[in-house]
Structure formats: structure tokens, C-alpha cells
Amino acid sequence: MVIPLSLNKKIESAIQLLIIKWLGSGCMAKKKKRQIPLIIQKKIDHISKSNIEVTHKNNMITISLYDHEIHQYLRHRTGRFSVYDPLDKYKKELEKRFKSIIYEDKKLSKLIEKYKGNPVSTKLAVFTKPNKSDSLKGIFYKLQGLIHKIKTPDIDNYQKTIFDVANEIFWIDDAQIFECTARKEYSTSNFTVFFIRYEDTNDELTTGRLKEDEYKDNIDLYNLAKDIKNGKENDEIE
Image 1 (spheres, one colour):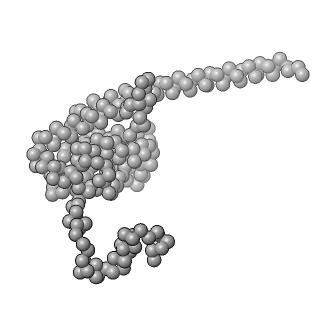
Image 2 (cartoon, helix red, strand yellow):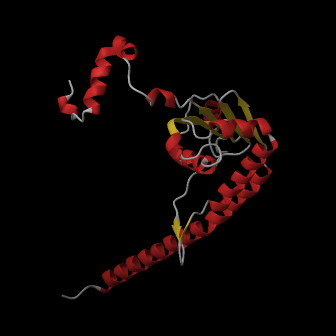
Image 3 (cartoon, helix red, strand yellow):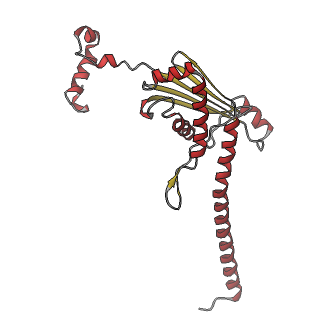
């Protein structure tokens, strides 16, 4: 079968176009990969100078990062010889700022020392400015809170970063967190607020034998507890 010359040229042009696109996408990917450290370095420089306020009352701590959006969690990357965390320097800078504030505030230091091993609940709120590329109408309604932030970063990636930083500073282990809520919204400036609440351990409730006057008003729950203690499966528990 003989392929017409005109068709040969079309095939050749299509192949060349595919090669150009393939090379171009590869270059863009490499460019994006090179830009990541620059973005992180900018965040490090910013957090080192940002105004951070830590207030506390009773068993609650409020951490405010003014004019700073906490950096989203990034997956660990594989280097030439090992796996590394691209946010390591950023997290260490934030840890340094937190530790410095705690060291200077003796009451805060005593509060953390007292409750560090207790159950913890957290709330995280991250506010970011709308993009200037948005329409004026879009920005207006975003600032009113009528348009929610549903674009990346994912909200759990904000949590992962702040948890990594707060772990071993405000609590001993992430397992102590029994409740966590988070929200991301638009605002007139970038802003991050992190709330930490310590709860009582109630360890005394697990010591000694369970007395009748403790369960007589809740006999159904007592029977369920007995079934679990005796190792009954879920389908055996009525």
C-alpha cells in the first residue's frame, strides 16, 4: 500500500506536535518542581517575622498567626539518598516561634506542663484573601461569606501541618486529640487561628470496682458494658 505524500506530511506534522507538547509538559513539570522550595522559603521568611499571639484562659489556648496562612501539608519526597519532608524548615521555624513564646510566658508554660498529657480538642480556622483575578462581584460576596472557599488547599492539609508543629509542644502525642474541627474562609487578609482545649482525664473513674449506686440509674448501659467486657460480638449484643 502506497501512502500519499500529502498524508505523510500530515503524519509527520502531528508527530512533531506531540513531541513538542510532551517536551513542553516535561519542562513545565520541572519548572514547577523547582518553584516549590522558593514558595516554602518565602513562607519561612514570612513566618519568622509574622506577629504570633498566644493567649490562654483556664484550660484553653488560642494561637493567632496574623497576616499568615498556615502552609498546607506536602507529601514527603524522595531525594537522591533518602526521603525528606519539604516543609521541615518551615515547621522548625514555626516550632521555634512557639517555644520562644512559651518560654517567655511562665503561666502558659505551667498550663501546658499541667495538661500536656490530657485529652485534647482542637479548632482551626484559616482565612485567605480572594484572588485579585476574581471579579469585583465575586470578591464582594466572598468577603461577605456567601461564597465559601472550596478550592485547594484541602482543609485536612492545613490540619496536618499545624498538628505536626504542635505535637510534643502542646501535647505529647497526636493520639490525645479526640476531637478536631476546621474551616477555611475568605477574608480581607490572610489569618490563621488555632484553638486548643484540654479536658480532664477522669482517670479515677477507671480504678476500683464498679459499685451498684454508680450504675443503678443506667442499668441498660451497664448490661451493654458487661457484654463488651465478656467479649460478646456485636451481633450477640441486643
